Length: 316
Image 1 (cartoon, rainbow, N blue to C red):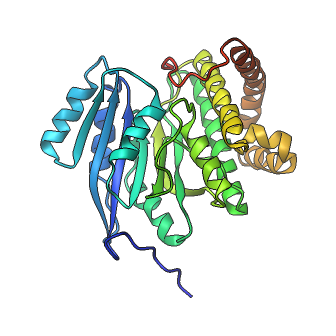
Image 2 (image 1 turned 60 degrees about the vertical axis):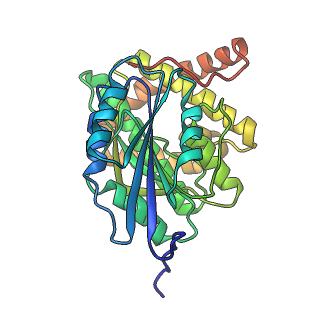
Image 3 (image 1 turned 90 degrees about the horizontal axis):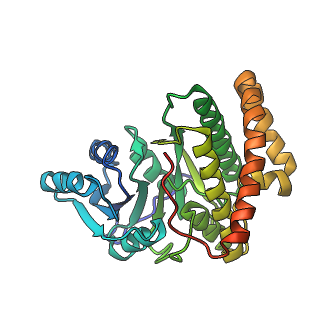
């Protein structure tokens, strides 16, 4: 029996809103908006708006968005004079969007052709799906060591999401590119550090598995140095621990699986090792001590700064 397609509020026609969170992304926001404008949608879907929240920008981000808004009436700019954190920007979008589906994408990302359609069609493939995330691929770095670490790290990240979704245990979402049905969430706490982790765990609590669309490819910017990776990991760890405190359920990331499901974690790492032995071995040599240091710094940071900070310095 064919799977039944879910319906939008207007019957069979479904509307899409895209929300973009940006802070000082003048270097990349144009490529994102152009990649969104070039996306094709299924016949029964309509893109109604692209809401860009520019928070505390001191560069030309807002000017670039205004330029696109003059050419495309669907593009809307909302400026926050002060950078209050991504969660605050997402809440602005959650209050304003009109679509049956909300797609969230970071201002430093770039969507490959066909990716928006693939992300959306996952809902038609599973009418019970409430939240779907895309498939992130890191932008190559000029630093070969950083490129190696980021490439394998994201490959392991995607393998983890894919395996858990297949098992019906997914509770972690890639916040670089994700979509949710209207009504899934009206707001999130303004101090949330990792929105993807929060939304994923929230869905799992409600009995909804995070779905992964392997064809919804998003190119993400990565740190340019190992120190940048370390700081990013520190922030992500603090964010995941925060979600566990807020919702009582830790996000099922690979590092969490090492403790809660070592068999599943071993399967993911061994699969990657068999697929690409030399890069994976080199990655483990570099990443294991880096991860240990990131955990130590995150614990130290949590002891010194007990309040969760929603605004973190940008990682170059």
